[in-house]
Length: 191
Image (cartoon, rainbow, N blue to C red):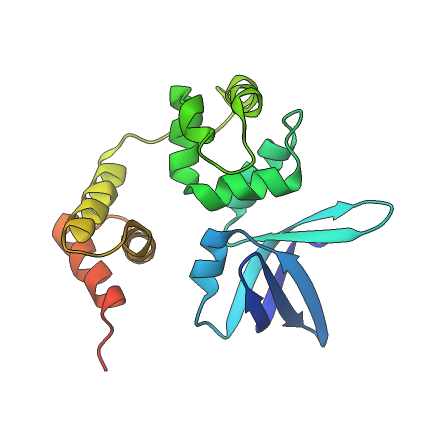
């Protein structure tokens, strides 16, 4: 089984990437959030889930092992296939997905294309209590406040979430002012 691939981005399109490693170009299915993270990069590393069927071998790639684990938990739910699981993780950040399942908010899951009432209810029922607890700690609140502040400054929610995520990964213990400075630096790189 392939667990992780790292190499040059040969081709990047919404929903898929060709990642060249060791002279082989691997076609990997990705979510839209992953596509946005990889845009503009020359190299990437993806955690891989392999689906083997009689007519195809399909690779699904994720930027973090935590997101891969959420994908694997989702496809274990009855009636949720890899495409639906990828759509769910494309539609919401892992933290948002965890909070949605934890709170039992099936209505939010139904907003994801391809997820109907029965599927949303089944996801909540089967995963509630099995996923890692959502940390309600200060770091999560600070990150949410930073995203909110950036949105109020005119950035899209998606741009703001991406920049804050990078800022948090660089300094997880940063306060709000620090995260905002770093996120603004990421959103407006010096020439």
